[in-house]
Length: 126
Image 1 (cartoon, rainbow, N blue to C red):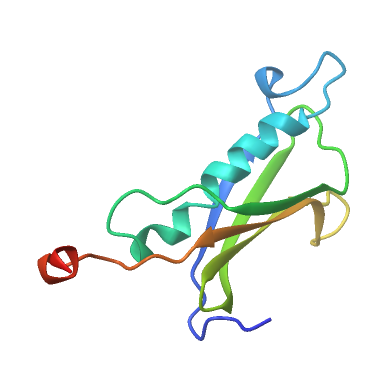
Image 2: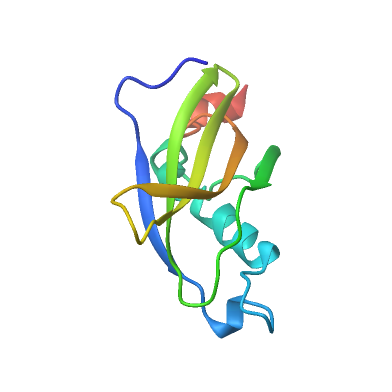
């Protein structure tokens, strides 16, 4: 997989609350997915002159559970695999209490169609 020479990434904090968890305190995967889907567009804003298009394909995987009051970090990074699309890799991590390492809660990969940044009048006339 070919990556960009200057990686474009975004880190967004996310706290598991009562509104984002079930009665047992587990993070609801659909809530996390919706948040991840929105954050996947953040590092793409400079590639599109208008709104960021919808993802054409995605892969989403929950590795571990997150619990009420857990502080997560959602990391989004643009990676480039071919000239027709932009790919955004997402990793959701949580700091371990006993060590200074991070554990992966979830990961995702989104494909976005690569469109021209702007359209000139001459291109519209042809």
